[in-house]
Length: 197
Image 1 (cartoon, rainbow, N blue to C red):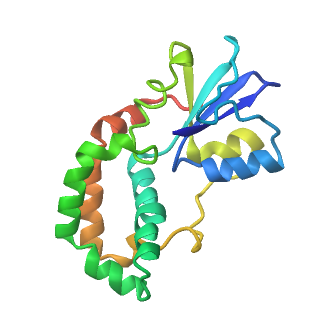
Image 2 (cartoon, rainbow, N blue to C red; image 1 turned 90 degrees about the vertical axis):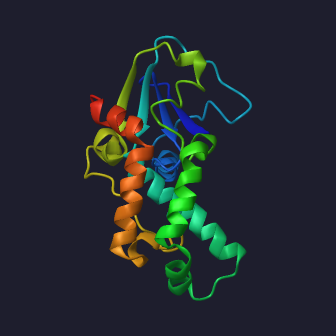
């Protein structure tokens, strides 16, 4: 459900949720930071009790919208072999479509690592460190924290994103954001309450 990185030098464990900077961070670690990945879904490398835990978090609504564009819509375009992408998106993703889709999402988001609540996961899943004090880092602050450089802004790589939110009418986008704010109300309150490092 996520990526965990150990920094043995500084005795820190970094936890990322999917759609929360993992791809960028993985590239960064391969190029500049030489950490190991302690969890691969089956095996867990023991974590010493004196390691500090840092969870990297992202605004819940932005995270969901990124997943929807980058994975949900993109997968449907590939599967259905869509040729006129913008027209297809405008015809398919109507307000009525989103009403039905988001009603289902209210009950299903916690089953997908890209959309689950960051306030509940990973603590529930990572019971072996759930009793430790956790610190929190905003995804946008990855560069500042690790490299003392400008804020990290997710790139809209056209090979990854299809641009659904730029294609749809603003009225539909506003409706989706309002509904997501209801769905993620608890997660948003939690996110806003964090004392970020």
